[in-house]
Amino acid sequence: MTVSCFVYYRILPGHIGEASRAAKQTVEQMWALTGVNGQLMTKINEPLLWMEVYNDISDLTTFLSAMHECVVQSNLSRWLQGEPQRHTEIFQTALFANEAPRCV
Image (cartoon, rainbow, N blue to C red; front, side, top):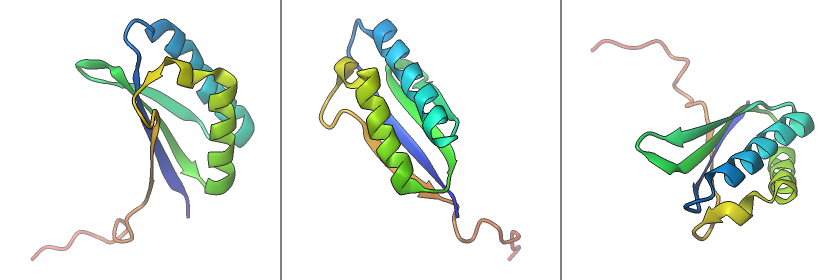
């Protein structure tokens, strides 16, 4: 079974450029270390709220360890606000998702 990882955070006002470079570096390093391709997103009408999305993660422990290493190396936390700065949520495919829809 694979899982998906969603990481969201707020950028410090006035530092979108620096944060963008660090976030892109994080996503690229994650690909290099884990083979999991990440997607960097921003919330509509809220440009300081960002999200990294990673799908098809087969080894969550290794993945999360690599993520910590990549964030430290990119210095991304320097450009984030709030505590905790990065909020991580892990999801799996719903057990009932492969069932055919039932009409009542």
